[in-house]
Length: 226
Length: 234
Figure 1: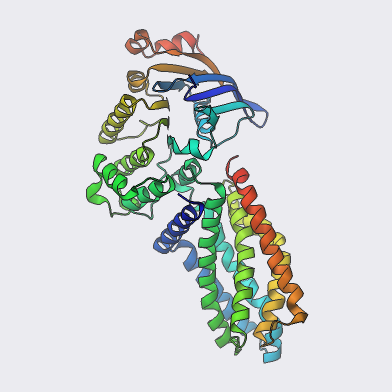
Figure 2: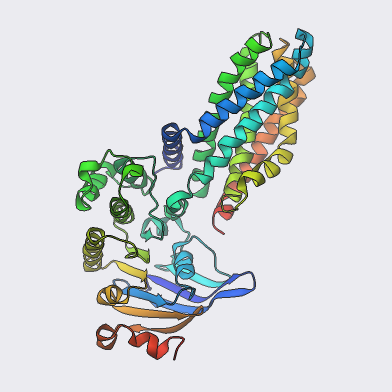
């Protein structure tokens, strides 16, 4: 069985298990919507202010709501010692990691897909003016967050306080990724195109994703087998 | 002949405490080793190292001469640990299909159905595992471990908490596995069941190998003999 088939098998297994239990996705959806709603009452923004805070606001919602999904990623394997069976199976740690990361990406993107229209309505912003570049930025930012989150989820899976440890490890590590994603998102939600002014942030984001994806794929086997 | 399982001077530390001390073990292909010892003797630690879940502090473990973490080696090994290692949110059939695919079986659907039949779970193949009784889960765990016809079986206290039907299923498939020259290493506290099946015995005492040799008629007639002779009380 090829690397990609094994990756797809893990991806489908995680999505199927999550869609049946809805443990993480329901909590993440609710959390994201509540924060968006609360912030809309806290501020009375003009369109200009909304444009300026949109990047920060959206990504704060995404990373906090996303942590609930990432926490479950490897923790889902703990009941019945399922992780042992996966480690014993003849699949490389990198296929296991990638399958889980892609499943997390799909779940996070689903939460984000709901958040954007809600953001548009509550904050009276037309965020679709640069739809495709914005989609690209959100996908790249979410992938950076997912890669780091999945890796640390594997690292903290056997720690008693993993729900606390995961955000403590993930948020500082992903500051460069978050900075880029926030700057780019604010720019694109404001209707500005992806021009040379912000291209440096785009390169920064892509570089971050490439480096952390490669690092995670190389190190995950060491993390899983203690 | 290359041993099916070999441990060469294996040490394992938890902090400063040596959980395993200089373990030397060679298991011939087709034999069944009963790994015995009191609680905390190091049976599970040794099995986890052989299964590739954990690294040695010092020394080396090999399966058919190759590293335990080698992908091809893992294809030849089946593990049944303390947990049942099946997913509650998947059906019995989906669980077996998942592991059949991961082990690269030619026809995972056929193998899954065959093992569901053998373990008496065919009629509940589409039932979610979370709705299964304990005995049904345990039989599914046996099906998962044997699904890919492993050449080496590592079983950690396989008879513990099994119901009579699951014990019967497990004993049958273990005898069949031995008949096709599968190598078995099983740790257990149930001496009589283990000794009836075993061709060899290894006794661990406080992380050290106190005895390793063939199972004798003496052991079978008095399962406590080995502990009395080589155990901590001697």
